[in-house]
Length: 136
Image 1 (tube, rainbow, N blue to C red):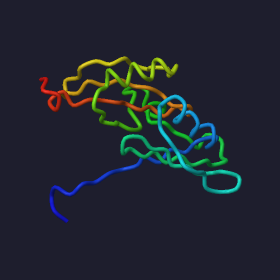
Image 2 (cartoon, rainbow, N blue to C red):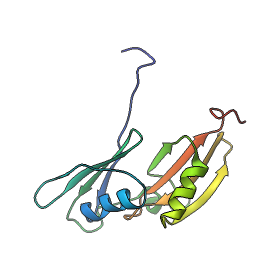
Image 3 (cartoon, helix red, strand yellow):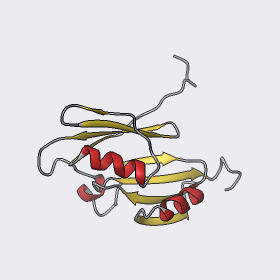
Image 4 (cartoon, helix red, strand yellow):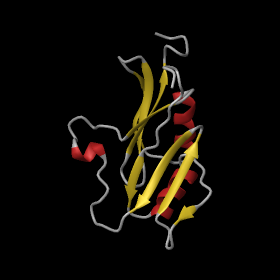
């Protein structure tokens, strides 16, 4: 494998209701899915723009543990997703009625990003690399 080989990653989120979670990602965040696994459904992979999020239903109270609930002082993300235009995506999400936790702002790490919580409380941060857009 060469040093510049392409890698990818898919966060694996434990959810209370996999159908409701997948529909939230589809209807509010613009992801797609083709199918559910299990009978009754217990797993789904949602995808958008090359990003995959795995959703797994586990029938155990309190199984989902979003990072910002474990460490509320820092409000840690569960996933950071790089996008081409954070402002345009923020406008899309706002129009779809997504609750925005933090609106877009420029960060000292040279990204412009914003945060949303999904149906199960997982915090997603969507950001644009300002250097890639010719900004600094």
